[in-house]
Image 1 (tube, rainbow, N blue to C red):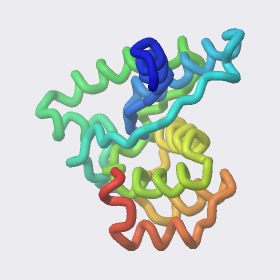
Image 2: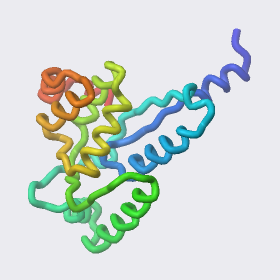
Image 3: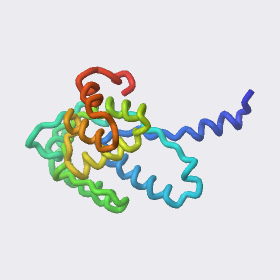
Length: 177
């Protein structure tokens, strides 16, 4: 039988991050967490599990449209207001040591990326996958719902690109997302 203290301790050891690849605050938060863990004496005891969360499930990439244009339309705000918000986020990102480039980023639906993430987690590569997609989206302007992009990024961390393509062309892992 377990004591209340043991149950409470186990509950406190559950370290989940509910995140989306297109969430700038998640990207910044991950960088801040990584920086904090560098000097934490018990960092080897910290285990964090990512959980899928679609921040903007209605997002759709429109070729030729800027991030600000897409975001402004989705949120029903003026484009200049969106750009102002992005400026503040970019400054916060720089302070955390990460680059957010809204001039090249492509706002898109992340369902397929989250489904591939579930496969990455099964392969013990969930955190690597998340970090690779944060960079791909915010820094390199990759389209995260593109099958070829997902396969290439997955292969870069040691996952099977053919398996990723199969996932992208099925409904596999929908329930897990």
